[in-house]
Length: 92
Image (tube, rainbow, N blue to C red; front, side):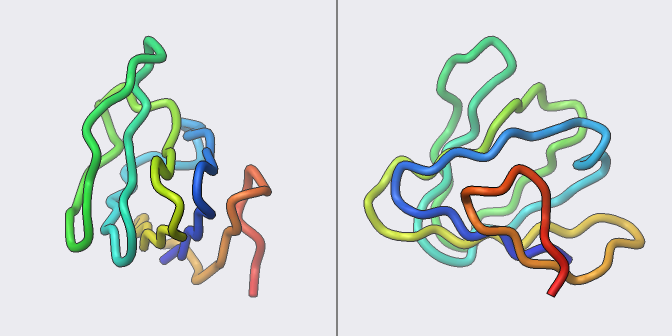
């Protein structure tokens, strides 16, 4: 499981090869899905779950001022933490 922390206004690119079969759950704040064509997608609040596979999502964006936290689960993944600045997760 990854824990993704996004500061207010932060954005993280979704690289299909790294996020294949990923399922996310918003545990704090709000998260907006940025669609493949660059259009803003739905804004998800706390306890909202979402799949990334086959959705065309190209980035995750925190539209608010408060920090957002998302748990990302992928089959066989190690537990890591990713801050909003890096593009890839950093092992704890």
